Image (cartoon, rainbow, N blue to C red; front, side):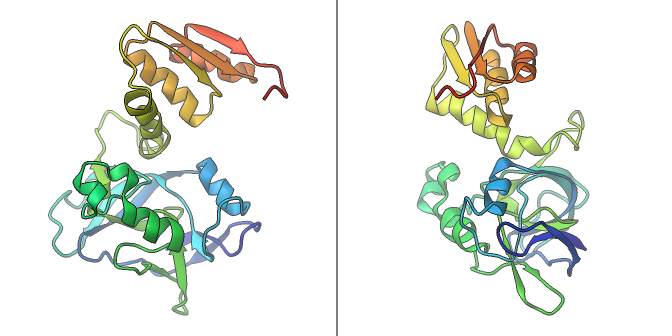
Length: 241
Protein backbone atom coordinates (compact mmCIF):
# COMPACT_ATOMS: atom_id res chain seq x y z
CA UNK A 1 0.00 0.00 0.00
CA UNK A 2 1.01 3.63 -0.34
CA UNK A 3 1.71 5.71 2.76
CA UNK A 4 2.83 9.29 3.33
CA UNK A 5 5.91 9.10 5.54
CA UNK A 6 7.47 11.84 7.64
CA UNK A 7 11.14 10.87 7.63
CA UNK A 8 12.30 13.61 10.00
CA UNK A 9 10.60 16.74 11.39
CA UNK A 10 10.78 19.73 9.09
CA UNK A 11 10.86 17.68 5.88
CA UNK A 12 8.20 17.05 3.25
CA UNK A 13 6.12 13.88 3.43
CA UNK A 14 7.20 11.17 0.99
CA UNK A 15 4.91 8.61 -0.64
CA UNK A 16 6.30 5.11 -0.24
CA UNK A 17 5.05 1.57 -0.83
CA UNK A 18 4.90 -0.44 2.40
CA UNK A 19 3.24 -3.76 3.36
CA UNK A 20 -0.45 -3.75 4.29
CA UNK A 21 -0.61 -4.32 8.07
CA UNK A 22 -2.45 -7.21 9.70
CA UNK A 23 -4.93 -6.50 12.52
CA UNK A 24 -4.06 -8.11 15.86
CA UNK A 25 -6.59 -9.28 18.48
CA UNK A 26 -9.07 -6.51 19.24
CA UNK A 27 -8.26 -4.57 16.06
CA UNK A 28 -9.71 -3.98 12.60
CA UNK A 29 -8.13 -3.20 9.26
CA UNK A 30 -9.73 -0.17 7.60
CA UNK A 31 -9.44 0.71 3.93
CA UNK A 32 -9.20 4.49 3.92
CA UNK A 33 -11.72 6.54 1.96
CA UNK A 34 -10.68 10.00 3.16
CA UNK A 35 -8.23 11.44 5.67
CA UNK A 36 -8.11 15.05 6.81
CA UNK A 37 -4.97 16.97 7.63
CA UNK A 38 -5.35 18.35 11.16
CA UNK A 39 -3.28 21.27 12.40
CA UNK A 40 -1.86 18.84 14.96
CA UNK A 41 -0.31 16.94 12.06
CA UNK A 42 1.31 20.17 10.93
CA UNK A 43 2.67 20.75 14.45
CA UNK A 44 4.40 17.36 14.26
CA UNK A 45 5.75 18.03 10.79
CA UNK A 46 7.13 21.39 11.93
CA UNK A 47 8.65 19.80 15.07
CA UNK A 48 6.40 21.92 17.29
CA UNK A 49 5.11 18.71 18.89
CA UNK A 50 7.66 16.00 19.68
CA UNK A 51 7.02 12.60 18.09
CA UNK A 52 9.33 9.76 17.01
CA UNK A 53 10.17 9.43 13.33
CA UNK A 54 10.00 8.03 10.73
CA UNK A 55 6.25 8.14 11.18
CA UNK A 56 2.92 8.02 9.41
CA UNK A 57 0.52 10.74 10.52
CA UNK A 58 -3.22 11.17 10.02
CA UNK A 59 -6.04 10.78 12.54
CA UNK A 60 -9.19 12.20 10.88
CA UNK A 61 -10.56 9.39 8.75
CA UNK A 62 -13.43 7.65 7.09
CA UNK A 63 -13.16 4.25 5.50
CA UNK A 64 -14.51 0.74 5.18
CA UNK A 65 -13.75 -2.21 7.43
CA UNK A 66 -11.61 -4.57 5.38
CA UNK A 67 -10.77 -7.30 7.91
CA UNK A 68 -11.29 -8.19 11.57
CA UNK A 69 -8.57 -9.24 13.98
CA UNK A 70 -8.99 -12.29 16.24
CA UNK A 71 -11.82 -11.91 18.74
CA UNK A 72 -13.51 -9.03 16.90
CA UNK A 73 -17.09 -9.62 15.73
CA UNK A 74 -18.25 -6.05 15.07
CA UNK A 75 -18.41 -4.02 12.92
CA UNK A 76 -18.66 -6.45 10.04
CA UNK A 77 -16.32 -6.33 7.08
CA UNK A 78 -17.66 -3.89 4.49
CA UNK A 79 -19.09 -1.49 7.09
CA UNK A 80 -18.38 2.22 6.40
CA UNK A 81 -16.82 3.72 9.54
CA UNK A 82 -15.19 6.76 11.09
CA UNK A 83 -12.71 6.77 13.97
CA UNK A 84 -11.73 9.19 16.72
CA UNK A 85 -8.18 10.44 17.14
CA UNK A 86 -8.15 9.34 20.80
CA UNK A 87 -8.21 5.55 20.50
CA UNK A 88 -9.58 4.26 23.84
CA UNK A 89 -7.90 1.13 25.13
CA UNK A 90 -11.08 0.20 27.00
CA UNK A 91 -9.09 -1.26 29.91
CA UNK A 92 -7.40 1.54 31.87
CA UNK A 93 -8.86 3.25 34.93
CA UNK A 94 -10.07 6.25 32.93
CA UNK A 95 -11.76 4.17 30.25
CA UNK A 96 -13.47 2.14 32.99
CA UNK A 97 -14.85 5.43 34.40
CA UNK A 98 -16.18 6.50 31.01
CA UNK A 99 -13.38 9.04 30.51
CA UNK A 100 -11.88 7.52 27.40
CA UNK A 101 -11.01 11.06 26.29
CA UNK A 102 -8.08 10.87 28.72
CA UNK A 103 -7.20 7.19 28.16
CA UNK A 104 -3.82 6.88 29.88
CA UNK A 105 -2.56 4.09 27.62
CA UNK A 106 -3.33 6.12 24.50
CA UNK A 107 -1.20 9.02 25.65
CA UNK A 108 1.55 6.92 27.24
CA UNK A 109 1.95 4.50 24.35
CA UNK A 110 0.63 6.06 21.17
CA UNK A 111 1.18 9.78 21.56
CA UNK A 112 4.61 9.46 23.15
CA UNK A 113 5.96 6.29 21.52
CA UNK A 114 3.97 5.82 18.32
CA UNK A 115 2.78 2.29 19.12
CA UNK A 116 -0.48 0.49 19.83
CA UNK A 117 -1.50 -1.17 23.09
CA UNK A 118 0.78 -4.18 22.90
CA UNK A 119 3.74 -1.83 22.67
CA UNK A 120 4.34 -2.43 18.96
CA UNK A 121 3.72 -0.54 15.76
CA UNK A 122 1.78 -2.16 12.92
CA UNK A 123 3.66 -0.39 10.14
CA UNK A 124 6.98 -1.42 8.66
CA UNK A 125 9.02 -0.64 5.62
CA UNK A 126 9.80 -3.39 3.14
CA UNK A 127 13.21 -3.81 4.80
CA UNK A 128 11.45 -4.52 8.11
CA UNK A 129 12.33 -1.24 9.81
CA UNK A 130 9.49 0.24 11.91
CA UNK A 131 7.32 3.23 11.13
CA UNK A 132 5.74 4.92 14.13
CA UNK A 133 2.01 5.58 14.23
CA UNK A 134 0.54 8.96 15.10
CA UNK A 135 -2.89 7.84 16.33
CA UNK A 136 -3.98 5.27 13.72
CA UNK A 137 -1.52 6.58 11.07
CA UNK A 138 -4.11 7.00 8.38
CA UNK A 139 -2.27 8.98 5.72
CA UNK A 140 -2.12 5.67 3.91
CA UNK A 141 -4.38 3.37 1.94
CA UNK A 142 -5.03 1.06 4.91
CA UNK A 143 -4.78 1.39 8.68
CA UNK A 144 -5.08 -0.84 11.72
CA UNK A 145 -7.42 0.64 14.33
CA UNK A 146 -8.51 -0.69 17.75
CA UNK A 147 -12.06 -2.00 17.47
CA UNK A 148 -12.97 0.28 20.39
CA UNK A 149 -12.36 3.24 18.10
CA UNK A 150 -14.42 2.56 14.96
CA UNK A 151 -18.02 3.70 14.57
CA UNK A 152 -20.44 2.92 11.73
CA UNK A 153 -21.00 5.89 9.43
CA UNK A 154 -24.66 6.61 8.61
CA UNK A 155 -25.50 6.50 4.91
CA UNK A 156 -26.71 10.10 5.12
CA UNK A 157 -23.18 11.39 5.82
CA UNK A 158 -20.76 11.75 2.89
CA UNK A 159 -17.48 9.93 3.63
CA UNK A 160 -15.38 12.74 2.15
CA UNK A 161 -16.73 15.22 4.71
CA UNK A 162 -17.01 12.90 7.70
CA UNK A 163 -13.37 12.54 8.90
CA UNK A 164 -13.67 15.68 11.05
CA UNK A 165 -16.24 13.86 13.20
CA UNK A 166 -13.35 12.08 14.93
CA UNK A 167 -11.40 15.23 15.80
CA UNK A 168 -12.70 18.78 15.36
CA UNK A 169 -16.37 17.91 15.87
CA UNK A 170 -16.06 15.87 19.04
CA UNK A 171 -13.47 18.31 20.42
CA UNK A 172 -16.03 21.07 19.92
CA UNK A 173 -18.78 18.93 21.45
CA UNK A 174 -16.62 18.32 24.52
CA UNK A 175 -16.01 22.04 24.90
CA UNK A 176 -19.73 22.84 24.75
CA UNK A 177 -21.17 19.86 26.62
CA UNK A 178 -18.52 19.18 29.25
CA UNK A 179 -16.13 22.12 29.64
CA UNK A 180 -18.73 24.89 29.37
CA UNK A 181 -21.77 22.76 30.32
CA UNK A 182 -23.80 25.07 28.09
CA UNK A 183 -27.52 25.21 28.80
CA UNK A 184 -30.37 26.40 26.60
CA UNK A 185 -30.82 30.15 26.83
CA UNK A 186 -27.23 30.90 27.85
CA UNK A 187 -24.89 33.12 25.84
CA UNK A 188 -21.52 32.11 24.44
CA UNK A 189 -18.57 33.77 22.73
CA UNK A 190 -16.38 31.79 20.35
CA UNK A 191 -12.93 33.29 19.79
CA UNK A 192 -11.20 32.04 16.61
CA UNK A 193 -13.21 30.16 14.01
CA UNK A 194 -10.98 27.36 12.81
CA UNK A 195 -12.03 23.73 12.58
CA UNK A 196 -12.93 23.50 16.27
CA UNK A 197 -14.32 27.01 16.68
CA UNK A 198 -16.67 26.78 13.69
CA UNK A 199 -18.04 23.52 15.05
CA UNK A 200 -18.51 25.06 18.50
CA UNK A 201 -20.76 27.64 16.84
CA UNK A 202 -22.91 24.92 15.28
CA UNK A 203 -23.07 22.79 18.42
CA UNK A 204 -23.86 25.76 20.68
CA UNK A 205 -26.68 26.60 18.31
CA UNK A 206 -27.94 23.05 18.60
CA UNK A 207 -27.80 23.29 22.41
CA UNK A 208 -30.10 26.31 22.29
CA UNK A 209 -27.73 29.17 23.12
CA UNK A 210 -29.64 32.46 23.03
CA UNK A 211 -26.66 34.44 21.74
CA UNK A 212 -23.55 33.21 19.95
CA UNK A 213 -20.86 35.83 19.44
CA UNK A 214 -18.25 34.79 16.88
CA UNK A 215 -14.86 36.53 16.92
CA UNK A 216 -12.16 36.28 14.25
CA UNK A 217 -9.87 38.36 12.02
CA UNK A 218 -10.93 36.69 8.76
CA UNK A 219 -14.15 37.99 7.15
CA UNK A 220 -14.82 34.70 5.32
CA UNK A 221 -14.75 32.79 8.61
CA UNK A 222 -17.17 35.26 10.16
CA UNK A 223 -19.51 34.89 7.20
CA UNK A 224 -19.42 31.11 7.61
CA UNK A 225 -20.08 31.47 11.35
CA UNK A 226 -23.28 33.36 10.59
CA UNK A 227 -24.40 30.57 8.30
CA UNK A 228 -23.61 28.10 11.10
CA UNK A 229 -25.79 29.95 13.61
CA UNK A 230 -23.80 32.86 15.10
CA UNK A 231 -26.11 35.69 16.12
CA UNK A 232 -23.36 38.32 16.29
CA UNK A 233 -19.93 38.67 14.71
CA UNK A 234 -16.91 40.68 15.83
CA UNK A 235 -13.98 41.45 13.55
CA UNK A 236 -10.91 41.46 15.80
CA UNK A 237 -8.03 43.79 14.82
CA UNK A 238 -4.98 41.95 13.57
CA UNK A 239 -2.24 41.75 16.15
CA UNK A 240 -4.64 41.99 19.09
CA UNK A 241 -3.67 39.44 21.79
